[in-house]
Length: 454
Image 1: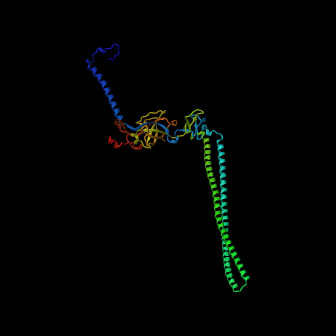
Image 2: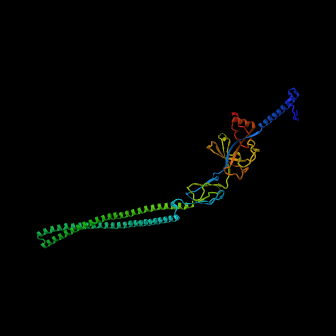
């Protein structure tokens, strides 16, 4: 029975004929099996009542919390030819350090004395503008002189008009007096003739009176002519007055026209000089853009353009720079069904690629190599992958590894409520979501609405 000998008798013995042997063999196997089965059942029963921490797991990558601390590309402002590199990948650069030197590739900027010649053009234009300003001042002075001369001339003409008017009045009075003398002489002559006929006077006296009449007549005619001349002179002075006004108005209008033309040329020159100064400033700034500078402190990680003598267009990514100092964070994506369970300020545990860890998602206190984080931001719009992006920053309780780099992989575990293991298995089998997060400082509670719905 013990099969010690090589000559076995097992096949030659009919075991069923020995009931005691059969009974002993079956009872031992059955008892061992029943004990094992009972032990497994008790173990499973105990495990079902162990506490289990509900969680949400998602994959992500390390990034910087602030947008200005994330990796960025350095671009050139102007097109040019790569002439000289001042850095290599892995170098630590400071803000303002020279990354690259470019040379000009556009023909309009080839002149090495371009700025100097442009300054000469600006100076020449400034001299021309100064000449126009002097011309405007001279024309203004000429207009003032013409206005003053016009005033004096008008005053002179006004005096002449007044004098002519007074002469007309005087000559008119003299003419009237001469006519009265003539009429008086006629009356006297008539009386003299009557007296001569009566013999009271001599013929000589009569002839003397007749001569007197002719003299008064001639004098009246002379006064009349003089009056007519004074009237004509008065009219001529009025005409001359109008002529002076028209003449000076024409001269002033001509000078003002010249001034308007000079002013137009002056403003056109000012506009051209402003454009030339703008162009000069652009030329001076363009020379500064020949040197591509680092916008911040950081590490050179990847050269996107290489070689010497290569032509590149403006705004071409040249090299990538990673900030020297940055606040760590992780971007993870959660399903829309789990989004209501995640709130700002919730805690998440992370496993980083390259750092050893032992993880029990249901028993986080037994896990090793995990690092805590705090939810900082949750996107309000869904991402292209159909999930919502959650940004988790580094926690102050346990700093993350210093050697973790931007872009490293990370697996996040959002810790939720504590529930029995049997409840979690039942929830998973039914496809129900985890219980709503109540906060780490509160006792474990079930969502009554959810339980009632279940």
